Length: 181
Ligand code: GDP
Image (cartoon, rainbow, N blue to C red; front, top):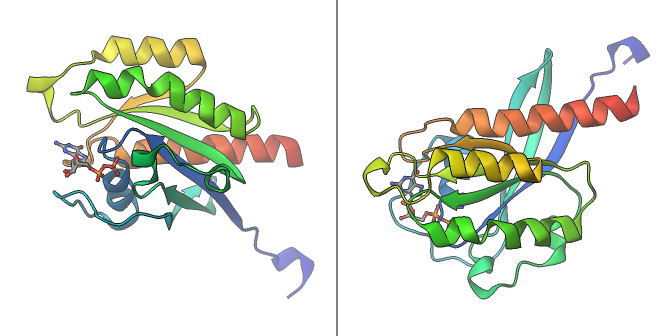
């Protein structure tokens, strides 16, 4: 293959963090396989899945890691964060405690990574409007004060799931391009 035919390939690691049962695994399975599971998984350990999005005509692959239950034991290891270019910090809009814990997750994330990480605050389960416990404005203002992107999603009915990942992947791509070019 000659130099001009070289295909540019991008593969970025993204982590999903947040309290247990906020919907991290389902956001990932919805994005990577368009699947939803009504029951929480039993497995413990780290798992990742890949999905590609097209940005500026280029295929950009994301390798997205799921804590797969490690957070239940407050034992998310530094290997989990290593090499990540982006992160989704997820809470459940119907459980305030999960929103209150976002600051702790953000501290942990920041202690393991540098400042150019693309970070998205994600209020998941927005289909549960009847039992909403955290307002849209509270999510927005936390994100603004911490310099995060913000979106509400539903892994159950697919609302904004693709958009959430796409924004993070695009931001990573832009961060990397700015440094390289
Ligand atoms: P994780 O522990 O953060 O990975 O959470 P899971 O993805 O295992 O989801 C925990 C529970 O919440 C499961 O029973 C899911 O079916 C449910 N769940 C996940 N996402 C949503 C959502 O968007 N809406 C609703 N109503 N339930 C969800």
